[in-house]
Length: 48
Image (cartoon, rainbow, N blue to C red; front, side, top):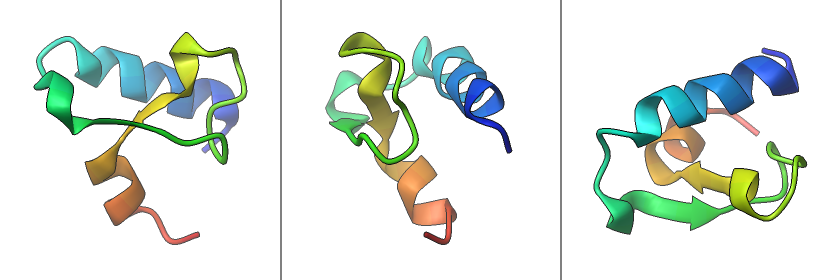
């Protein structure tokens, strides 16, 4: 996935997610402070 696809995936999902599921990772999201909020499930499902 490109960074843009990852970015879009995170934010299309974020609307219906509980706020406590939000964690900040710079690895995948480099679009600024707000867009660096990536989800725990995303990190779990992704092999780094």
